[in-house]
Length: 242
Image (cartoon, rainbow, N blue to C red; front, top):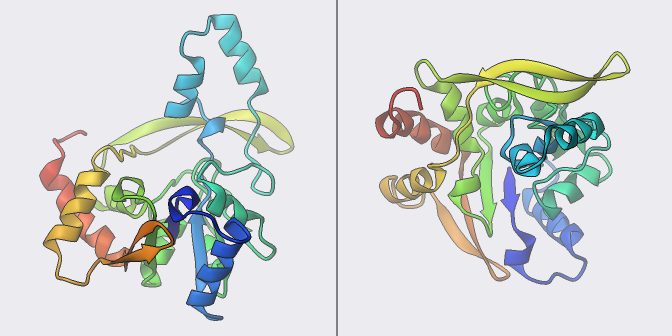
């Protein structure tokens, strides 16, 4: 699974397509490239939405809500950067159907990773993250930090008595646009930078491998090891109920 900033890498001959080809070449014919293709814009419980409605009056908010597009796995753009969008649009890619936290994958194990992503499970046992964990996948942070490491969210589901909350987003059901409300684990990435620094500092040498790709710093590590570390770290560092 790759999180990337193409701006951090620098100029490439054919833009993001070059990076996708390089990643697939490094993985080889038996490898699978997975990216998060999240779409928070169709939700009224996301920070993005709250920022959009800040300062608007009731009529303006109502107009905005009426025009918010429902999630369409084939068409809705991701907000996770150019690399994720390029993978999503690459021929042969498969995308999961979660209306807020979908993933896209290319390669031999794509269907196994992507299928059966339950709509009421963002990033837990019924998501591609758990399938990647089962497959002993690796995570590549390419020009980005641990603060965007989605893997740590899997640990939020695996701690004792995780905090839960309500989510609300726009979907299409039976051909009709509608708002849909569901409950899931409360996701919080506010301390992921600190968590990642401890993961890199406190695990044996070589657990996190670093290198350069263009102008970017890259980190490569086991998704399973990162999730397991976070599962023990979170209860020790987060107050109860957070």
